[in-house]
Image (cartoon, rainbow, N blue to C red):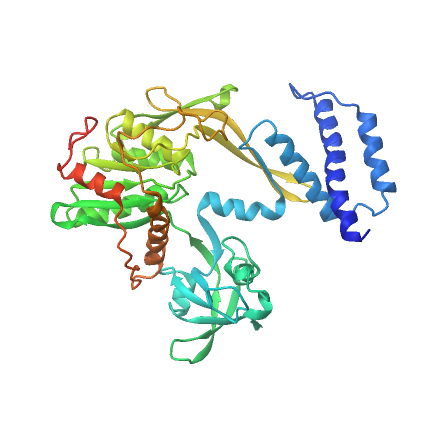
Length: 451
């Protein structure tokens, strides 16, 4: 048996053993509901596997990884949305929550955009006023080396360059705020240059596609892709820009918005409400029970005709916003039923021997201002007929158009990072946007909406 095979057998065993130890610690801690375990047996199993298993228990990092996997499995056995995030993945989790990361502010795509070796990557977008833009990096430039290392050396198989998430190339370009990275760039005319870029905090952005659907009649459009630390501020700025050009009605797109920060969903609702309860939070423990209210001083416009687009991808914080606007009859919901994740997660950072870990767990359930929860039961049941908020006007997106919708959303992001970006003309007609627009223009009727 090879060492790799030994390790494949080892890690699951180690996770079980560590589980005994942790659960024994819970039992000793006096935590209400903690299971009783035979501490002597748990210690015996841990010691025997550590001392006698023929392949050994691997490196300390492998043991730590098994430990965190065991804890993650334990909490998920009770709470499907719970998670234990090991220290080496915490920074990525923080980025997702805050909408910010430390880097240079570029979007890249491999050349060629297909399987095979990658010798360079193309700059497909540059964040306006970001570090790369300040250093003179331009859309269309190709990166052939990072800090003297050729792209082919950083991603020898080419696959990592195409990964949607973390990759060796991404890690090579990103780094600690204030440090510099040197990019070897090839311009569109073939000239090469070395460009030094100082890394800084970059905002991913969550507000996209700001435009007029009908400029003559003032029907505007904005998409909120998620709720990060700057969403309400960015949305207010987008609305201010539309208002200067004659905004008289708005389509707010929450399709595919999986949620994010609760306080930002409340702040966005506050833009359109004059006050009152936005969401109720009910927990098993009293400290997780709360009522979140709108502040009349933070209202942007409480009378602007508003249509909100939702679908099965709208979940959690986006459902908080949609539910509040619907309960106050402040907006008409157009599209398809939302997912039904009316749960509140507490994200706690905890110091461990291996570094700061994250413990995420469900502590409360959301209720709309009228006291309704649309939680899916159980959370992973795709067939719960009562899960999710039903739209006021049901408009189904044809299956053949769903991929085009995703492409259109991606193009909005590119356009945000490249003002000269020209969307591909594919003849796609967004039936849900069109339905919302006709309501706002008074060309169609819905009992739940009076324009």
